[in-house]
View 1 (cartoon, rainbow, N blue to C red):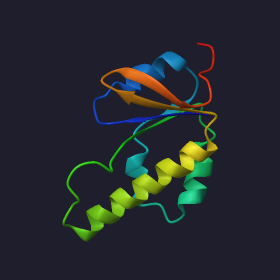
View 2 (view 1 turned 30 degrees about the vertical axis):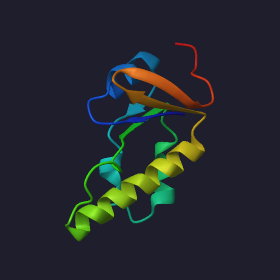
View 3 (view 1 turned 120 degrees about the vertical axis):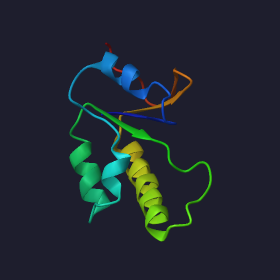
Length: 105
């Protein structure tokens, strides 16, 4: 599995689409409602490419539910990165390989 992460509108989806295979986008949104993040990470790891927006930067939300959702999204990203064969961070449309190697496109 290739895990692609980065800020909003950083080119994650455009980059991921070039890789092909089964893909799922914006998985950080699934974390807030997940009863078991490990199980969710296992399910998502079955995809070829998984993308998630980084949510840890910026102002900490005052709303407790929003803070919990952000914490869950960050924990899910860590779990996915651990399961991934390749981790790519996108920034300004530029991919940086953090772990492994990209598969042949």
